[in-house]
Length: 379
Image 1 (cartoon, one colour):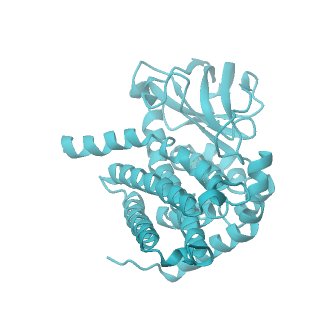
Image 2 (cartoon, one colour):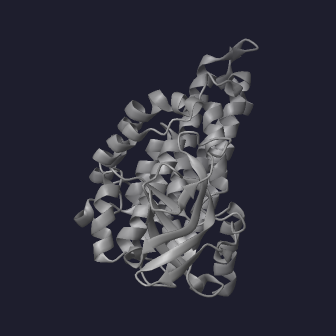
């Protein structure tokens, strides 16, 4: 067991931190306030290899590990959690094409996705199929060399702006074995989008319904084989859960650092906040819980990299702990700031709004508990 980063990982961490400080953090408040999708900043990230972190180098990716990705997303989220989270989703969708797609499909899309000339969205959730994802109803019916898609997807990050939609559809009977994955390009006749959702946070990435009405998509855009879609979607989510957990850790670490600095500057009752034992204990607990969540996330990332048999439950454990702990630490940091923490002049309230959804997406934390408990009780 080695708890130290190697030289390459330290360099990756430093690069991601510097990029977040220079390219994300100075603009994050504006992106949040004006609901700006920062295309230029994302493409600058892609120029550093962050558009395809764990995508094969043969199609333009960086070929890094899931642990490397966790290190990167933790740093990026300290600059802008919402934008880092979109980059996580883009990487997840691109990886699904790269890992499961036919060679022609990989060559067609991955080079443009890794440079972020194209943006990607992941389309699983539906209005009536959230946690029960295997109950999805969007249907793809074979018609010669094409599929005809009908249905709707809900809460799609990048919706309307993305160029590529990795869509889980029903090609067979009810249940997970009747689901397939297909790539749909923006501009395809029959593809349309609902109005932008008005969200609590994640304002730097658009979210909307994605609708399919007699949408014709070439059979060549099928990812893997018919019936593999649910398995592909879940494999994608193992990595996505690590990434979003890392985003929670990065936001929480930034807020913890802000709270510690604030405690050394702010005085009440004739002494610095840092001299009050109750607040000393609070900051100690925040740091301890954050470090514990970080170590579990790194372990889960290593298991996903290794293809371990228990990678999925460990990814669920890490996502559950990191996102719950991340929100708790951010909330505690806001409390330490008192009324100032509630003002938009300070970044605490933005971090709070952005991390809250991490406990819901990529599988709710209640579903994470189901995955973990089933693994324990059925093995």
